[in-house]
Each structure stands twice: as structure tokens, then as C-alpha cells.
Length: 288
Image (cartoon, rainbow, N blue to C red; front, top):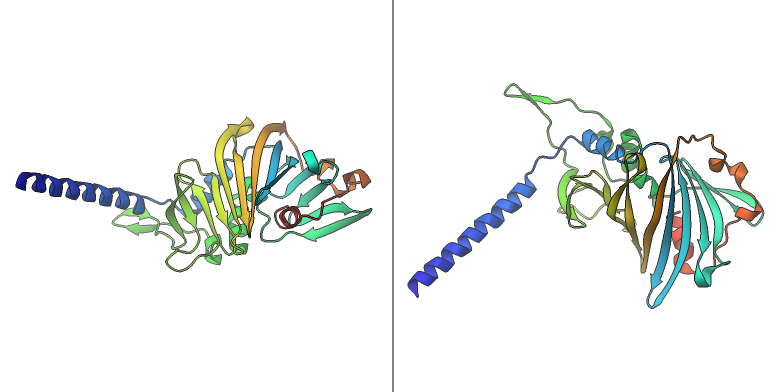
């Protein structure tokens, strides 16, 4: 019995040490310079234009209904989406929205409307081609402090060039992977945060100031080095919206001068139409 007790104690101690080592190795693992994280993330979004088709499913209690979205994307500043209701929403949901910079444009009735995009306009986080854009956007979203916009030089320590770690980047798990979490420490409070996967440098999660959360999962590599999630979820208030990506294809060389990104391409046939559904209206008002 005494030998068994000693064995159990040694086994428990070994597991405790192993657990502590694993925790420490994750907690104190190397975190690269912030500018390197954002530039590597920007490199994952391919080149030229892309067409993305996806099914957006809205759920609340026992209800479930779907909208097909067809996106034409050049970069973080130039996008276009056409929506079409499926099943019981056929004919009730339709229209086209053009996104340019911080503004979206669409036809309401017979008139062209321009609206400023808010803090829940998250689509650029999946398409940015510029590290400078991401860093600026994260400051605007109150994720990172203004000093994050400045490039830092290394500090000489014992003859070696090293970067001092920044307080707003830490390691954190999300979606079963280790990520660089950019935002204030949870010990300080729950603030806007973006999670960028440590291995692949893709955006896995974003939580905004409104506490709305977007998660991106099941990434796949498509044409021209484009990494894109096959599944996305949006949680806001009592609503849960899931996105199933069905197709991603390269459109080759595309420029902002393409007519598809111009408001002049919008006409009566593109008029935006949405039913009186809280989930649909809130989603397309805030996230589109």
C-alpha cells in the first residue's frame, strides 16, 4: 500500500510538472513583431479578383431560412455582393450592394442610397491585402493602440538585436488552434479583439466593441494563394447566423475601374429588398 501511495504521488507530480511545462511553453512561446504578424496575414489573401458564393443561414429558436450571396472582391476597399432569397425567402430577399472604402451604395425603391459603413463591417478582415490597412483598421476598431501604427526598431541586448514584446499581443486558443490575440489582456477587461492563427496567419475570430463575434473556420487554399474559410458564424444579440462557402474562384487581374465596382452599374433590377425580419434586417444593416 505504501509503495502504491509513493507511485501515485510520483505519477501525480510528473503529470503536474508536464502540465506546467506545457502551459509555460505556450504562454512564453516566441511572439514575432506585430508588423510581421499583420504583413504575413495580408499575404494570405491572394492576388487579383475573386468570386465567392455562399449560403447565409439565419436561425432563431426553431426558425431557419437561407440567403444566397455572390461576392465579387478585389481587395478590402472594393467589393460587391448580390443577395437572393432561397426557399420561402425567394422573391422576398434580393438586391445588390457595392462597397467602396468606408461607404456602401444600393438602390432603395428607385433612388441610389449611400451609407457610411460602421464598426461591424468585418468583411475586409477576410480580404485585406495591406498590412498598413489592417493596422489602421484595428486602431479604428479600438483593438490596438495608436502607437501600433509606428514601425519599431530592434533593441540591442548583449550584442543581439531583439524586439521588446508589445502589451496588446498575446497567445490565445480559439477554434482549437493557438492564435496571436490582438487586444487588451483579459485581466484588464473584455475589449475588442482579433485572433490570427499562429501557424497559418489567417483570421480565426473577431470580437467587436458591441460584443458581436465573427468566427472563421475550416480554411482552405484556393487559386493564387488565397486562403479562405469554408465556414463562418456571426453571433450578435440573440441571433446566430452561419455562412457556408460553396465556391471560391479567381477572376484573374481585376481593377477598381471595373464596372462591377461602380454605382453606375446599379439599376432598378438591383434594388435592395428585405422582409420585416429582425435578424435579416439587422444582419444586412450591420454586417453588410
